[in-house]
Amino acid sequence: MITKIELAKILKKHNFTEEAIQRILNKRIKQLLAQGKADEIEKIFKVLDDHKINKGTIENCLTVLALGKADEIERILKVLDAYKISKETIENCLSVLAFGKADEIEKIFKVLDDHKINKETIENCLYVLARGKANEIERIFKVLDDHKINKETIENCLTVLARGKADEIERILKVLDGHKISKETIENCLSVLAFGKADEIKRIFKVLDDHKIRKETIENCLSVLAQGKADEIERIFKVLDDYKISNGTIENCLTVLAQGKADEIERILKVLEDYKISKETIENCLS
Image 1 (cartoon, rainbow, N blue to C red):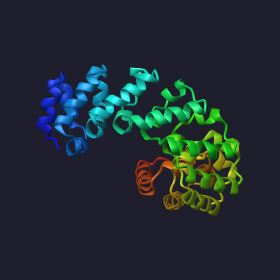
Image 2 (image 1 turned 135 degrees about the horizontal axis):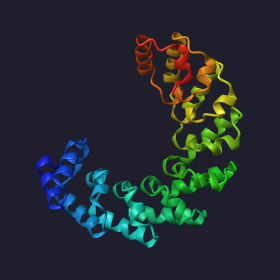
Image 3 (image 1 turned 30 degrees about the vertical axis):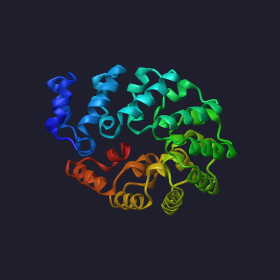
């Protein structure tokens, strides 16, 4: 564990400006203070400095100081360099140094190369190296191939490889197929496979069906299945119904079901009502 005073001293030693130090100390840095170790942070700074990682980048991803290990970061940077991943790309996703493992990253590169995923695509989603597991990624590729999901689609959403689980993706695809959601629709929103849960998606479909939301509408906003929660969606419908917001309006903005929270929506509607904002105006901008 490190104190704020110790952290401030380290930051000053590594030439952070007083303004930057105060910004860092004013951030939510509980994790860094709870899990960081002064000696290890010193070593991490040395490694990052040796590799010319700029201070602003570190400031925006303090997790690398809280969770990273200097020796492991050094190994990761060597692997990334061997694969010609630029410093600028690494700086845009410093979490790869916080969460990644050099040996695992090397295996992931091999799997992605076997599946003809090019370097530029990987650079656009370095997160796959931070959070992915080579064996799991291999299994995900097999599931997606079995369901005829094309490689270009996967390249446009490598998050499915970083966040998805092969068994869960298989179950999700079966649920979607059971509801006649086309392959093309799934390919347009592959995040449903990355973030969705099959059992939850089943429950969401039931709620949407109970409220007469058409399949075509769901296909146009598959994120409701990826991000939504059935119980919360049910509660949102109740709030909107209490305020006489029509189903047709909701169908035009299913995002309200994917991202909204019933209690907050109710408070917002109350404020709008207090300020005499008409129902018609609200319906024109449900987001």
